[in-house]
Length: 296
Image 1 (cartoon, one colour):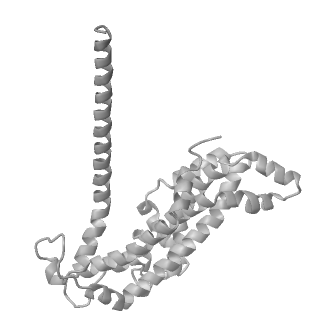
Image 2 (spheres, helix red, strand yellow):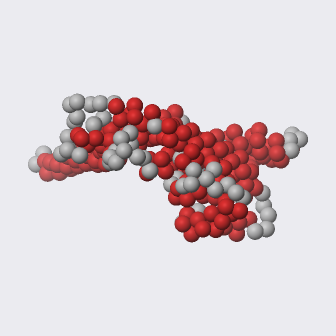
Image 3 (cartoon, rainbow, N blue to C red):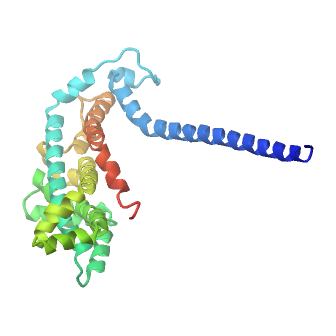
C-alpha cells in the first residue's frame, strides 16, 4: 500500500497541473480574443462616438460615453448633395468593378486552372506580379491614357482603371479554386455530351460560389475604399467624386470650420454598407476562405 501511494500522488499532482494549465490557457485565450476584438472595433466606436457630438464638443477632452448625443451631423451629411452623389458614384463604380472582375476573372481562372497550355505557369506568375505593383507606379501612364480617351473627370475613368488592381487578385484566387475541383466531374460531363462552355457555367462555376462571393466582396471593398485613382481622375469634377475623395475634401455645413464630427458621421455611413454585406454573406465568405484547406 505504501509503494502505491507515491504513484497515486504523482498521478493526482499531474492531473491538478493539467487542470490548472487548461484553465490558464482558456483565460489567456479569452483575454487575447477580447483584446483583438477591442483593438478592431474601437476605431469604429470612436468614429461613431465622435459623430454624435457637436463640433464644439468634438474638440473638448475625450468622453468615451457621451451623455448628450446629437444626430445633426448625419442630417448634415445626407443634406450634402456632393456626399450623396459620391455614394451613388461609389456604388456604381464598385458594382461594375465586381461584375467585370468576376466575369473576366472566372473565364481566365478556368483557363489557368483547368486547361493545359504552354506558358500557363508563366502567365499565372505574371498575374501575381501585377498585384505587387504599387498604384503610384502606373498612375502617370494611366492618367495619360485617361486623358487621351477624354475621360478625365468622369466616372467612366474609374470604371476602366479599377480592374487593373481588382482583376489580377480575382484571377489568382479563383484559379486556385478551379484547380482544386475534381476532374471527374468535368470528364463525366464531357462524356455525356456537354461542351466545354457548358461544363464551365453549369457544373464548375456553381461549385465555386463561395469563392465568387469572397472575391467579389473583397473586390467591392477595394473599389469602395480606393482613393488615389479616384482623386487623380475626378479632381476636376466634383460630381464624379467617390466617397473617399468626398470625405477627404469634406467642407462641412458651415464655411471655414473643421468638420471633424461631420467627417466621422460620413465615415460611419460609408462603413455600414460594408458591414452589412459581410454579415449577409458571412457563410459564403467562411466557406470561400476555408475551401481547399482539407483535401479529400
